[in-house]
Length: 205
Image (cartoon, rainbow, N blue to C red; front, side):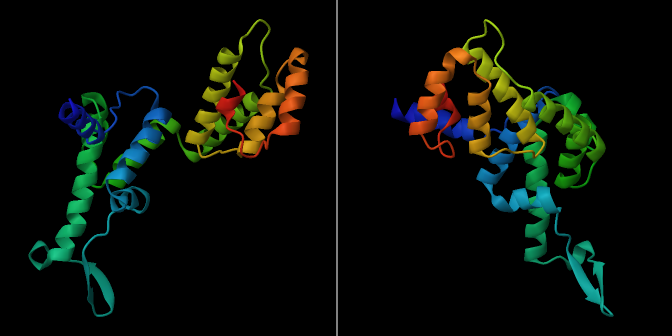
């Protein structure tokens, strides 16, 4: 039984999260952690691009020819190939076709990001809309706590995917403020007893 469990866990860990064009922010977050857990050098390629083998000629850096590669150069090229392989394995055929012609893993990652998050101008517009939703967020009439928390979580996760992150204190304080007056005694008790800067959001449910 233990062996079966171990094999299944290993298989799950080694398989990248799949992406079919839906829920990109969720996939991006999962894929980021997956790549970093495999090898942080792979994530460095995503953020900074591959290191291309070069040589100095008359004080200038030029690309090496294939027959000039040494072991270190091959290792650099293999890292980019590994990262491309990880991304390819995560994509369905439609998404694969979107990036298959690109040379580097960074280009592939950036193409998907622009496709599903838009340019910086589009991302800024999305952030502004989500921040507006966050600031006006309140518990709806006849809504239970679980439903409210799910809506709240959708907003903050979408913002996090666009690199807009609030502190724990801000998140907890906001959700306490949006509760109806009937919750006021509980809110006051929580604020008096708990450290809101470290109180997990889940503990408010």
